[in-house]
Amino acid sequence: MLRILHTADIHLDGNFKFLGEKGQAHRQQIERTFDRIVELARSDGYHLLLIAGDLFDSPHPSRRTVEHVKQQLGTLPIPVCILPGNHDALQPQSVYSRERFPANVHIFRDTPTYLPFPEWGLVIGGTPCTDSRGSALAAIRRPDPCTWFVVMAHGNMEIPGFVDAASRPLRASEIDALQADYVALGDWHALQEYSRPGVKVYYPGAPEPTTRSQEQTGHVLSVTLNDQGVQVSPLRVGRVRCRTVSQDVTNLDEAQLLSQLRGQTGADLLLSIQLRGMRAMQEYIDLAALQESLEASCYALHISDESTLTADAIALDDFPENQVIGEFIRIMLAQIKQSPDPDQRRIDEQALQVGVALLQGKAVLR
Image 1 (cartoon, one colour):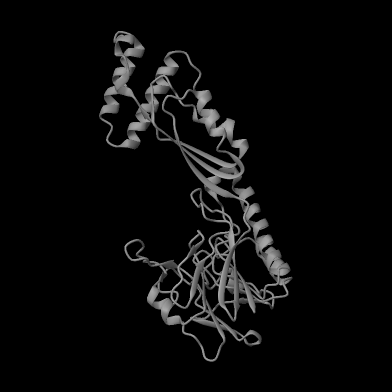
Image 2: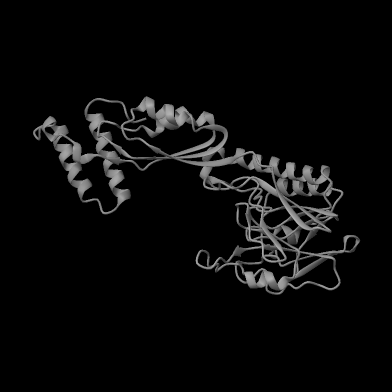
């Protein structure tokens, strides 16, 4: 029996600008999750660790991160196979060209590379990313003899009618031609299976999310090769989970809205809240106040207001034209009516709400 731990798309040293000041904390979290993967490979009886691309977020990670990776991987009593991905591509001055990794770490350098492990009757094949062009599988074929053939690839699965991969395509016909037992993929950040007759094909997804919308991250794959064939099981290693919430604000006052949103929060959630529905002019939504009230209950929080102002329900008789507020409302209603697209309409609607609130003496700006 042969046991392999398959991971990809760790993205050490990423900047994660979308998290603002929390980007540094997320970098540290990803490093802790990487350490957890290494410990899992060490302590749970695995024979190999495969990293199918984008271990680093760029070809030029920081010295501290490189040394940490070398120290962690060098302590493993098993081989580690690293395929350069599109983010950490194999280039003349990249980390994989300039650094000397521990003896148990094998970097894919040739097109293609074949790494034999005769003690297990295993060969691992793969082509490193050097740029964004070309197939990741076209030149790879099963060598003879070998009991097990595993292929590593970093690219985009072509799915007729859904995904037409122009960059590093992975085609079903190429997978069939490999005659592989297992294909260890990287590049797509969600846990997904694309197995073919006779071969298991998997993306493990990213161990931690690298954008707000990645809701199937957090796993590695435990792969067992034995007399019964190939068995693949996902293992949860990540801390952070993404969640997108669409919240209807219709007929909700500020306290009710806050109460409903509190029920969606969680300490390990990278939470995106989209406000939708209809609101009256006097129902101004203070996004800054909502953010301040909720963000301590989340790993990270982003709120967007996509609700629509019920401008046609404004009783203009309550705001005479000879008053400043009445004139302002009429000017803004005319501008809203002429808004060229939904995004501009929302901006104009918010301007109307804020302006009316200010003219009524309310504190709405911070």
